[in-house]
Image 1 (tube, one colour):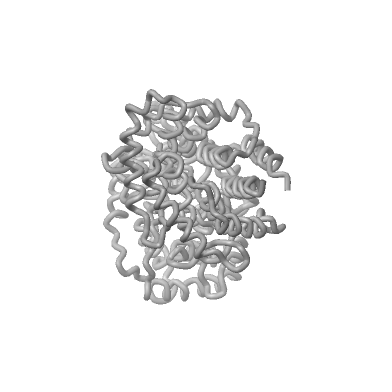
Image 2: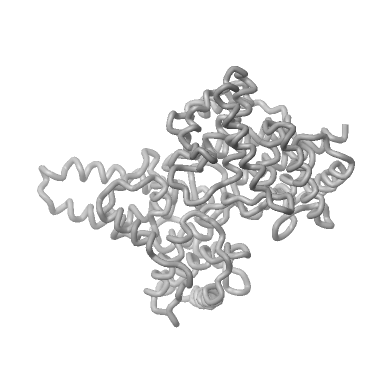
Length: 513
């Protein structure tokens, strides 16, 4: 395999598909089946839901990750059953699966807005009146009610709320001060965009019968925005023939991660100057969003800054300090939890900048020391880390050991050794690694933990990584990725995953001399 050529082709592909390369989402596709049956590709979206259903009637991954996609897909099939009776058996099977999931609910994963999505979808399913009503033990509607009140008040909601606008329903969305981004998306979410369009129809009808002098400008603005939103939705649906991803665009997020993976691993790749300029332009005083329609976040800001510094274009990381809580860095202000991967990426960004601008150590050195200690203190007893933005501990562990190994100093060598021992203990018989099954993405992370995380790897690490390399070079290894990244349901940012795999293969090849 020509790793360098593959990496160059991958980077060129980022320019060819600037919105990002992302797997289709059962959750988001289900919402479009209900909210936008007029959108081209409706039949293909229904077929996608039917094809993704498991034998037990559920959708999605184990360990609680199946609840949200199963709720969404079941409600979508119920909503279309009158027009397509052939979906009724699958809908009934979904209802049975939900009765089981909600009767003995597992510990639910820390995915975005799960406490909003679950009660909203339970309410929608119960409104269909099929069988016994669903109940969701342990889930209340306090936050959902608060979001609906906020939108109904006409106040402009926070950008992060727009990403899940669909949970509020069209009535609340109709009253809210919500407008699409210039690209046409609401919250970088097809479901949120479709909700806004569905809410707009009654407004448009009301304006038509109002006093022309008072409404002409408002009507024109709404009409233009609606046209942009509709065109955006149509474009998103065409990309994959109907099914849609949970979030798009992810331009800055994708480019930052792809370039960081490849360059950090030493892969010699030519980066188009236009991409570097776009990435530099995305750095703003208040932080950098993953893509249009999303709020600025510390994760994207950090990785974009890190990638630029690796490319020889270091940018002052002062925008990151808006996310500093004093103890750790939050993903965004008002975050309900904490993320080790975000803080690891902050350490990367600050460390790479100080490496390029040594005088900045006086300002950022104490912050780096604090973040490094915070990360080390959150290592689990088995040597791994876990995180709220990814289902796999291999991702969280790689993020932490790379940052600590490169920018944490000698005092953090022990956590890296413990992480390597955890990786060695969890390799599968076929050479792979993985939470639920061995897969290429997690294998790539494990290999980099063994080879790229600081101290020189010993013979055990080398042999285990080479076994992982043999697994990755199988023909199918680079073509099918299990969704592992957290959004409303699990997704795979496929270009980012390919970059991680190519980085691991390159490092493994280099380790053989």
